[in-house]
Length: 118
Length: 118
DNA sequence: GCTGGTTATGTCTGGGAAAACATATCGGAA
DNA sequence: TTCCGATATGTTTTCCCAGACATAACCAGC
Image (cartoon, rainbow over all chains, first blue to last red; front, side, top):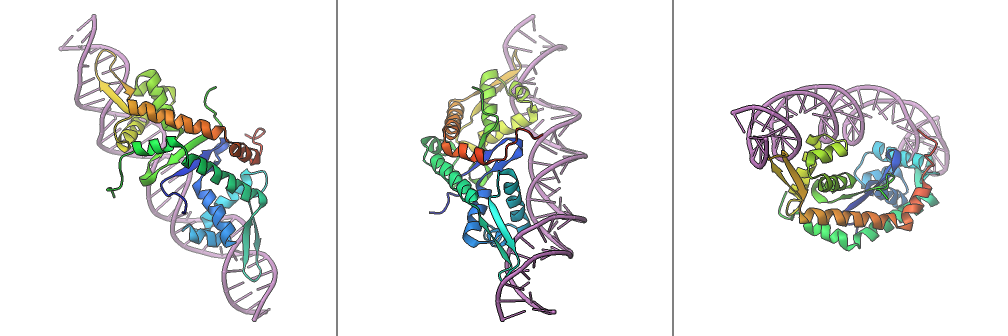
């Protein structure tokens, strides 16, 4: 009952900001692991990249989606802000809505059957 | 009543196939102009690119979305197949559904106000 | 048998994004 | 005061895709 690997939804707003499955999964992984680096490992992306995505999100939203702290016993950590959690939830809602749409099934059925291809 | 320039929806299926605003607009332009090259001009993309997109779509769907003919008085032309029209219509439906969703408004409102930026 | 506009492809190259690599910094705990 | 794991960035390298350019094939009509 994990996320449907066959589909992802990318929203493209003006001025180049996009928000899609990658950022949503990253937010979720951060909220579940408590750190950017652990989230990066889970999603098999470099810390560099995960951090860059977080920075991009924080910059494009009215207030940060992720807040982080350095140092300490565990080296630091990160967590979703209230807005971060809300954005993630809204995105998942849109995903669910899409997944439930009959038009999506029709589109899928129109695709070539890839089950036997590499 | 034109398409919302602030938003675009990209569906990403397995094996690298994506279907988003660009391909949808191209299909629509082909159906309205009757040729790939005219559609490309309208959308300000090279014929090379427009044709490549058509080829990609035709390859990934069970049957072609666009059928074309060469030569003749007008040099040739292209038109949507029944499936092509159906795919386009379904995609627009999904767009509309998304646009009407309250979650999308919430996401937009959470973005930084870009009205005063370059 | 030319003409013209279109479809259909091949090739080359520059730029930009992603990955790889490298540090610097932080601070609680032991 | 040393250590560790995490945050925070700078720099370099790789690589792929987009666009530019070029050319062939097609065919109704004149």
